[in-house]
Length: 421
Image 1 (cartoon, rainbow, N blue to C red):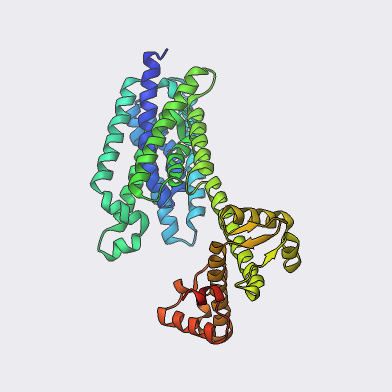
Image 2 (cartoon, rainbow, N blue to C red):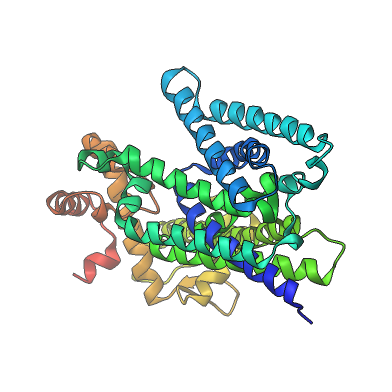
């Protein structure tokens, strides 16, 4: 049974995941994922300094301090990248380690204070303490998440251009630098509101994983943002429920591991960009290329006897070209299923009418490419793959007709096609 405290934590982590997924998608698209990681680590000194200034554990004050400290860290990264010869990845590594180290030192100093240090609980901001979330925390997360959503909707068109082509935005007269800083500020807000739940170390993962997972499922920005928001919401909710069912497991790391599982699921099983789909596509392309090669070879062997029938065994084909036995068997089986060849009574293979037509078209395409290479070298730049690219798709129509005439004049035009015209 879900208790009141569990429900509070569940709503809070769900809102946190949704806002992190939405804002983090732009970090992924802008290739600023490591910047989000640096920002999360740079927020720790601000938390500690805010506690020292206020004198008590005030969540709004500490989150404000974390936000300002994160912005200072981002500013330092930008300054190092712009005014020195240090590259961005090096600058991120420097700021991440320096600010995080400073935060750890400040946290330890606060813990050693006799009066209030033991009550600060700043260590919970390093790895997070989801179970300590209260209703006021949820309202704060909801308010900041709504603020991020409102800013994104207000500047959606500008953010979309800056995310994909900041140079074009500058040419159009848009303040691309200011828009980029505003986007970084939103990422800072998303990071800050996640610190109490998942902590400094794990917040970058929650920021990156939903957007990276959604990227496998779509090429459209609108759908990507929706998917990333949904993925982030489910990551927070499912991770919280798992940590509730198994009370000995910490919620923050479980939330991140849930996001990792979703990322791996997307990586392997997304319909277009997933590893399985790409493997199947590569296999289909490899099979089609092999089939085209075999059909061209069979046409060259059978054309002298045309219009009579010519049959061949697998051994005949193996002797003509060093086909691996298993590959040749699979190709012939696929061609039989595709009704390009049929099997005679004695187990030999011969063309069907459809097979003759397709093989003749492939032979014509192959011979045109050979003609381009030997007689028209100026067009050789159009060559991509002899078996896969259609000549007609790569050269002007007038030149294609010229190649057609030259094949006929040289007696190399496929007889099957010549008779049908």
